[in-house]
Image (cartoon, rainbow, N blue to C red; front, top):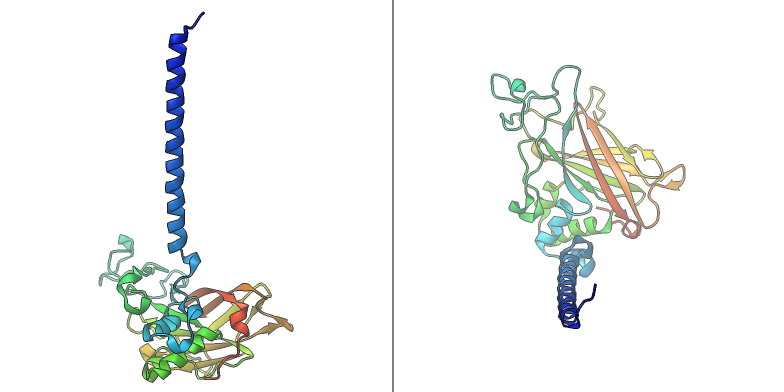
Amino acid sequence: MKVSRKTTIPELTRARRAHGRRGALLNSAFQTILSLVTLFLVFSPLTRADDFWKQKPPSQWSHDQALKLVRRSPWAKVEVVVFLRRENQASYSIPTGTKHCDPDAIDQNGNCLQKGKIEAPVDSSRQPNAAPRLSPSTAFLVRWESVAPVTQAFARLEELGEHTLTTFQAQPLRVPADRYVITVKLEQPGFAGFEPFTVTRAGEPDLRATLKTRTGTVTPLEVEFTGAGANSSVHFFFPRTLNRVPLLGPGMDSADFNMEGPGFAVHSKFTLDSELLKQPQASL
C-alpha cells in the first residue's frame, strides 16, 4: 500500500513534536525529582545539622542544648517498660481505662488487667526540651554516661548554676575511665506503688542488668543508687573489656542494654562512636 508524501510528512512532524513534548516533560520531572532529593538531603537527619556538640564548644552550649544531651540525644532516651507475665496473672493493674484494653480484661474499677499491657509514648513535639510526653505507663530515662558530650553537658549545666537540675536528672557521682556507666532514671512511675529500684533482704539490688556487644555480654561490676521515690535512679558500672578484648570495637559500634526487675523489663540500644569513647572522661 502506498502512503502519499502529503500524509507522511505531517505525521512525522506531529511525531517529532510529541517526542519533544515528552522530552520536555521528562526533563521537567527530572528537575522536580532532583529538587525533592536536594530538599530531603538538606532536612534529612543524615546531615546532622542539629549536632550542635560537633559545631561549637561546650562553653557555647545553651541551657536547653545541654539539657537535651542528658535528656534526649544519641546517648539518652526514654524507654517504655514492658511488664512481664507471671503464670496466669497480670504483673500489675495499670489504670489506663478502656482505651487500649480488651473489654474482657477490665476489672470492676475500670483498670486494665491485660497481661503485659502498656501504652506507647505519644508525640514529643508538645513537650519542652525535646522530652517525650508519655501516657500513664511506666517509663525510664536510660543514659550512656561514658561519652564526652554527656559529661560536658552536665559540666555546662553546673556552669549555668543548675546544680539542682543536674541532681534531678540523675547525674552519677562518678564516671570512671575504666568503666562504661549507664544510668536508669525513673521517668514516669505510671501508677502508685511501683518501686522498681528495690533491694533484697540481703541488701542486694533486686535488678539484673546486661550489656551486649559484638564482643559478648557482660554484667555490671558495681551498682549504685541515687535519689529517692519519683527521683530515684540506678547506675550500672560495666567493664570495658571481656577476656581482655575491648567490649566496643573501633569506629561506630552498637550496644544493647537490658535491665530486669521484679515483674518488669526495659531494653535500650545505643550506637556509639569510638572516638567519643576514647576522649578522657571527667570524674564527677
